[in-house]
Image 1 (cartoon, one colour):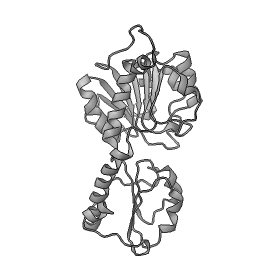
Image 2 (spheres, helix red, strand yellow):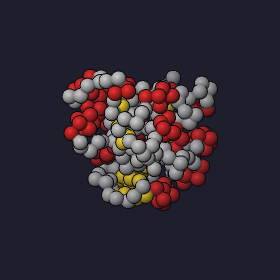
Image 3 (cartoon, rainbow, N blue to C red):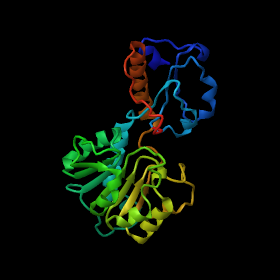
Image 4 (cartoon, rainbow, N blue to C red):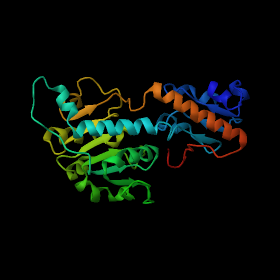
Length: 286
């Protein structure tokens, strides 16, 4: 409410509204009953809009939280990558002095899947490490800060040289299990996989096999499949080369402030007849 009012608008009963700001991602089933023909614009809370896909239509404008949480998620991705490269997770589990393990991020070859807001924020964070960064996205349009930009069709060409593979892309039918047995087999035995996108990007059974066999260096996962919370007793919990965080790359405490800023900005743009930020592509589903 405060974010809407900060833009100079007022909050009214749903049947009087022409715009709907939905801030409750946990209960999408309550959402459809608030939609009516007078709603011109809907603001959804997160970049991921999976629960709302059945409700999208061409009758109104839809925006989501894409880009809102990019900075904290990029920070988390960097932290997870460093923790993997420097064996922080391994050392933390030890109960005795152990042998040195690790590799440098400085000068590493990093492959990032996805060319959105997270990547935009992550590239400057990697710059001081002088990494060679390849970004794979839907088109090969160059991205500032990337050494090379290509399409996802070239994934198997770049995987063998990657020291790290970071997933920061939308989950669509085309990107589900984009990392499977063949992709993991193509990676170096020292390479780390970092997933701050969606669990469905990775074939979990194939990942467990790769981690157990040591065919990759390790994985750092903020998201999983089965979808969070990852069940107690799942094999991923016990693998020494797997770091799991409980979907906290962006916490509610971080995110609510950022979402409020986006809502205020978009409400102002809506009132002024301007272009809204975070437009959902109905056809692509994100």
